[in-house]
Image 1 (tube, rainbow, N blue to C red):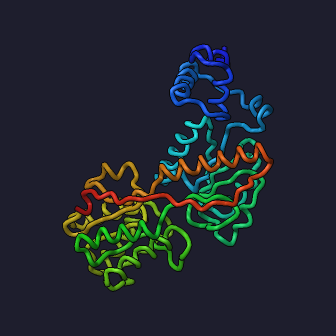
Image 2: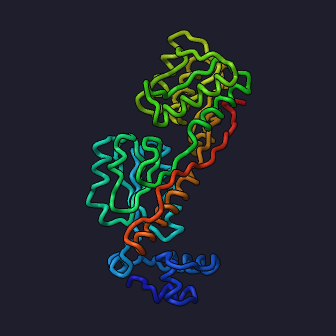
Image 3: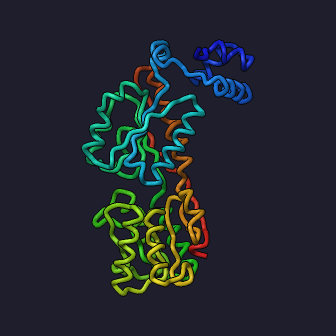
Length: 339
């Protein structure tokens, strides 16, 4: 038979009310007690009755996470971080993909699946600032990414300009002056590519290093194949460069493979810098220097803010506080590809 709330309480040596508080995150519980309850839940494989829970509290304990594509390692690792942050709060995550398509993203906001979740963490890629009004929905919503700023929903994002400037300064500090970039989007201002390109330009200007448009590698997507293709184009052009700053780690890994195939040595001939601090970058040959943009913090803050909004809605029927713009900290991770 399936374990019950009574079974968990008996095994953990606490009251049923305490177990309910842990499962529903409805009242403060001491960390030691919470750990004991969670251990009992895990041992008994206790599964809350979401239907009964919804009827009692008006919430399901399930939140949605919409990302562009799980095939891109950053979003897979982000989803993992969100699930861990949610699990600590007794929440379950329903993950959906949009493929970064604007129409699909708009459909996601109106999807019938929203009826089965208490709120949504939404990593936007296809929509832009001009679509901000579509984010005025009747359920708790937290936006991730760099496509919509100062909209009607809470927004958690990374410091793209500052982080890209720091990455470029890291390469400049090693004496590199011919720094190519890979992953730029022509004409983009708002968005990860546009913001990271702005940070790159800021670093060059501050160091009085002339900008050379021939060192810009444009791509549409940010997969390894795109990084490899952009690097082949740079090598074929004959333009001189002694460093590469790729706008994400997968681009950098694709570019580094082509650099090595061309007989160049990383970092002696070409230093390579990525962005995202994916797990695999610590195991590439050579290991990849990168920017850690605060992915764990993004996940933690997004789940935290969403849960606050869910509680507000449960108590008051609507969110009362104004939307927040939250930026996370970043750090430079120096590895073998630059030093």
